Image 1 (cartoon, chains in turn brown, blue):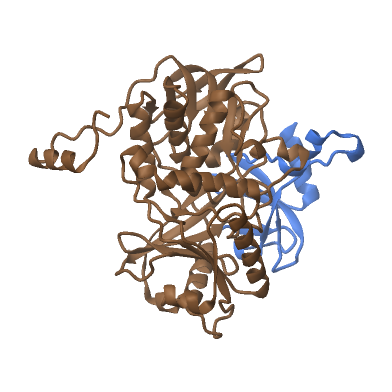
Image 2 (image 1 turned 120 degrees about the vertical axis):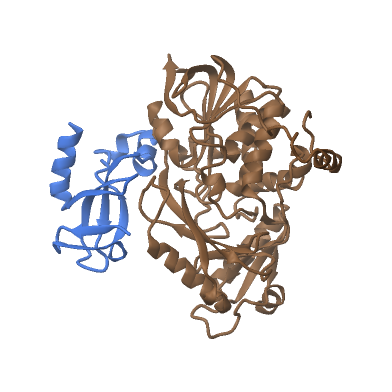
Length: 417
Length: 97
């Protein structure tokens, strides 16, 4: 790698007053023809391009991004990573992603700041606890680590949490995945972009796809704001805008795009060293390396592409967090934002071929796509390279909405979607 | 916060009084027994999900509890109007034609 990062490169560049660092990825002009075009330069799209080049030897690839890299949902999530899903298909897919996370910084030679601080899903009712035990057992059978905790064990790990009976919905226990955690979201996009660029992938920002060129049921290329670009294979990884791209191909997808909001507090001293999520009162919180509390809300109920939601959703989430952590009631919030998530009917992604030869979609990740970034890119690259799904994403085809073989993670996954 | 007018109560109220009830005017296949799985799957699961104007249903859950139609822009969140389901459908069909 021409621009390899190491302690040695840091010292060398330090001695040169940090004036000779090279750009992490190249920004070339688009060529007329590629083997594969990836539409969408978020984490999933960049990961797809990286694994296409690295594992399948397909290096004549372009990633087209209408804005800037990782400026969509990659930069708008709460960075939680876990794989404690109930159903076999989902558990295997997310676990594949988690295993890739564990070696990702070394693989990319880029510190994605993956921190396995554990993810805790608390239960507030008897039924919550039954579901937690069932899920933890299912996880263990699928080789996913899981522990069921008592309220006292929760309190020992997270001293600020209120486990008393004073709460409206007292905490009765939790599941805990020790290998779960968080990562730096920007670094994930940058790391994959740098890795892909190094292998010969063209990363083209400020290039919006405005149409798909289809002849005789085959994809031939895309119309963009920077001219037509041809390719026999096109992978769409556009999250909230997937339905818009599908419409260009005359396809309908089982997706609805909703705003999903999150917010962070001012920086504080370390007070919570794991991730706490609650399905029942709906809120989740972790603390970033900068000391901010990172808090995620639920989706706004209505369909929206506006990257903003309604204030009462934030109010509801803040109430839930204060219910669990009364001492946070005096914490001031710093920033708030919304991303557009593409929610599928069964809360599971679609990683699939379509009836148009050479056109592939990777979408429907809904509220939980960040955790799957490397796994998603890995299996989608396989799907594009072989024109056939990877065994791990075979069940996540578009066909399942005709056959009825849904993977219903809506109520089953560890947190409400 | 959306401000939605209920066509029954004839009053603009805040979004929290209402509950979103999905895309409006999805046509159910006339003879369900005769359609194939793909058509039925399309009816049950697939949605227009447009980036632009959207006909949708809202229910006035904290008011009259009636369901009605709203035409709303999904990027600006501007609301063009709200109608009873029947009145809205006439307008919707005229737009589609």
